[in-house]
Image 1 (cartoon, rainbow, N blue to C red):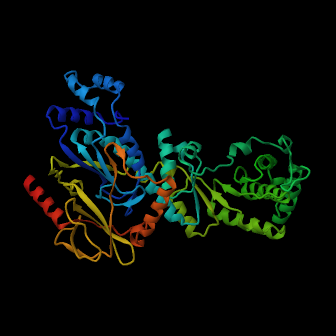
Image 2 (cartoon, rainbow, N blue to C red; image 1 turned 30 degrees about the horizontal axis):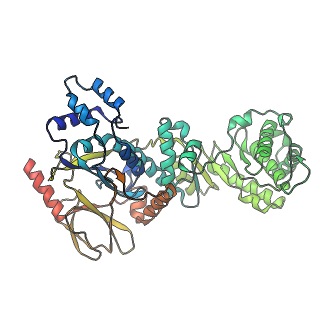
Image 3 (cartoon, rainbow, N blue to C red; image 1 turned 60 degrees about the vertical axis):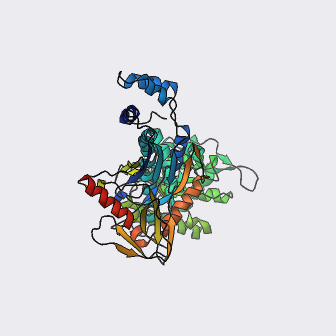
Length: 524
């Protein structure tokens, strides 16, 4: 994977080598400049993949042969010989724990090592962190809107940017708070719970009950198999009478599809209701088959809608399910879960909540995995120190100016246990203490220092990679997911809200502020 990089990383590497600077000690930081989706936070993810890349980082003989063909013919052979020896054995990486809430300008990763190697790692680390953090943040926003009780399912594989994008979307959506994925390979690779039943094509493939084979299903408690098709037809008459709906309006091909699926999966029967008409066909047919299954001791697991006014239909469906439960004395029938899909967005979720829907499960695809509201997080990777001297990128755009020096980062908490500020200090500064008054300079604010007194102080970075090896036990994916949800829950409501949130302040210490001012003045 060493060649998963931009060509200019290799031309710069050659430049460092020619100048004799390739082994100069250097440090770089990976961060983003602006919170995504007009929010106040992001989730930092991609660390485990980044560490896996670092462990394997080296150039193969085939890589070197290819580089000889693309670099200028004047490139010295000795440089290629040197590249054969390059790995990450002298690299140290510190990071926020994967799944942590992170904020703009605060380093997600800090990378230290020989200048040439630190440079070569840039593009790949950005590739591994950028999309991962973006889609995890997008998923977290859906979770916050939906609330803790709603089940969320990622169904975006067919809309994702290729197989890699589809797998990454499944993995990082799960970290962000989704419960399930439809992606079978993601389930195998990452242990994410997979879900899925039927699509419209299965229902459309049937035209009549004569096509149902086999037709019989044994009762759950044992005994002679029962003709489920005939039993469902008898229940359909009773359901249509209750609903005052003509039985002939219920599509018999749809009924056949439901019966066939129920015989195949009697413990996991879910009806897709909108292939034809929801209220006159899909719902009566589902109720008939579900009641027939109940008579044999089985329990349907839900219904799904994929079109129309999802809120209004969910209310009508819930009314019918409750009526069937009461009339036919099936107490659980009224609480059958209602699932929806159909290009669900943040605005869709807001309308579901605002209009008091009866929806229990939501499948989100395109608007989750493609992140259409913001297609890139915009992470950058910048040198902050070379040969013990702090580096500063000075630009007319203050947002693009870097913050020099190797840093320690602290999260400051208030009396309520909410983080209220992230503080960057130079690495050699003493750590701030809880209850200590601190003079800090908030980024983006001009003027005098601000005084703050945190109730608690948390160092954000841990060292995860040293001497070519991962040096801390990495959490499992469910543990990362739990950490992400806990990290989000700590945010104050003003910072957690998705619409017009209060900006989260990031500050520097007095000493770092003075260094920044000195370097800025020296370079002007």
